[in-house]
Image (cartoon, rainbow, N blue to C red; front, side, top):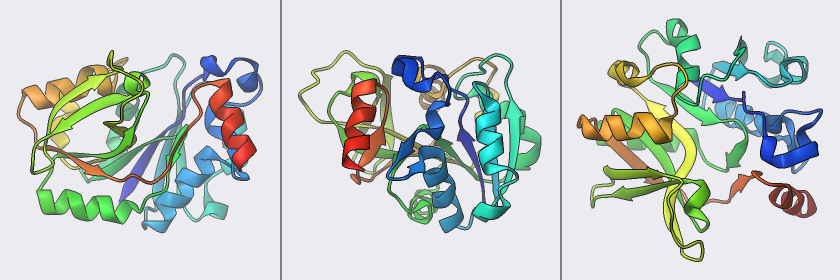
Length: 231
């Protein structure tokens, strides 16, 4: 199995916290968030990890190198301008060989076993599986509705909903096995706004697996300070 870890974001909402360090390299519990995600991949038997870069790329490349000391093989792709969460996959298309692969958002972390997601994906015969969790403040997330068989029937990115309620949201880990998904991916488009609505409209088998382990996001200075204090 292979994995693409999306790591090109600027983290502009974090202000001067990311002046000299890209958001995926901010430390949570003693390690960069990106390192936790690479460790999660290794634990699931992922050998090849692809990382897209844009903001301060040298910080990430100098830390992880070719991945040998982390037990994986890492290859990078630099984006002179951001390609979007979905568009970023195009840089690695020739390396995927039409095989199933994970997509992981490199600036957040949830404690999970990727092999459990793989088992779920196979049991459902899914084209595209999404790890889900319950969160309040869904306005900054992708809101998901599933049927009784866990098939996703609706996806709304950054919805206008009540922040005091808990909703089923996108946790930022995907498993993709249908090469036809790439028919709906172009440069500068995102999964939440563009790809998911297209897949649902075209009857792709998109399923959501719920994992209510702690989701660590650091979208704002206050959130980051919260995690630093509790690390």
